[in-house]
Each structure stands twice: as C-alpha cells, then as structure tokens.
Amino acid sequence: MGMIEKYFEKLLWSSRHMVLAAVIASLLLSLLLFVITAVDVVGLLSHASDYFVASIEDRKVLKIEMVAHTVGAIDGFLLATILLIFALGLYELFISDIDEAKESGQSAKVLVINSLDDLKSKLAKVILMILVVTFFEVSLSMSFTSALDLVYFSLGILMVSLALYFGSKSSH
Picture 1: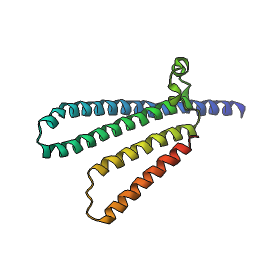
Picture 2: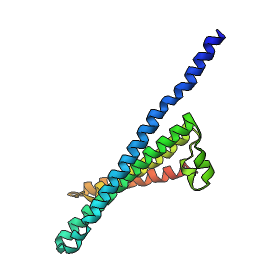
Picture 3: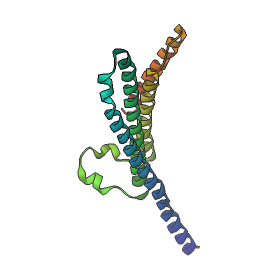
Picture 4: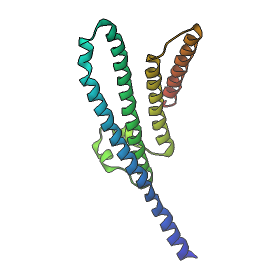
C-alpha cells in the first residue's frame, strides 16, 4: 500500500502544474487587453484635434465623449491588471515563488501573493475600482428627468463611497 500511496501523492502533487494553463491564459489575456486599450488611447488622442476645431456646442458633447472613452481606457487597464495579478498570484501559490520579484526589492510587494485570501483581497480591490470607474462612466451619459432620478443617483454615489470606505478599512 505504501508504494501506491507514494505514486498517487506524486501524481497529486504534480497535478498542481495544471494551473499553468490558467496562468498562461491570464497573461495572454492581460497582454491582449493592454494592447487593445493602448490602441484605443492612441485613437482617442488622434481625435483630440477635433475638439479644438469644433463649435462651442459640439465641444460639450465631444468633451463628454472623450472623458467617457478615457474612463473606458482606465477600465481596460484595470481589467488587464486584474488578469496580471491573477496570473502572478496563481503561479506563486501553486507553482513557485517568483525569484525575480524577491530580488528586485522594488515595489513588487503589490504582486507578492502569500495565500488565496491575499489574492482574493488584491483582486477585490481592483474589481472595486473597476466598478467605481464604470459607475463614473455611466453617470456621464445619464439624463435626469425627475427628482427621483437625482435621489437614485445620490444613493448610487453613497453606495460607491461606502464601498470605497469599507474597502480601505479592510486593508488596515
């Protein structure tokens, strides 16, 4: 029974390398999102000159659109960052510590993951920031037709504020 148990445990321990599929996929998706978002930013910058030659009436619309696209770019970069943190965290938890991160001594502490709870906490903070940015992006295009719309919007701002407050308290 000891020999079977030994081989089974070796197989079980080696199965952790399946996580490499998630690590590689997350890294590729992160890279893809960084590239796509950077291309969007370049496109946004190329249309910046439209703002300067537009009429006063059109400038207001263009400004709102540019701010919305900028916020969308922030969302893209944050999502790419989530995927990067996820890939690094899974690798460190299941495969091996990243020696380069330890040797660099720079601000790599953000990317050092010690447990699943640590990974979950870091991901939750970035996801919370995406939700805040998305709320801001949606609020730019809102139109208020009644006082109740303003009340709902105010409640949304209150909820975002509470989420940020409790999110910052959880790290202390």
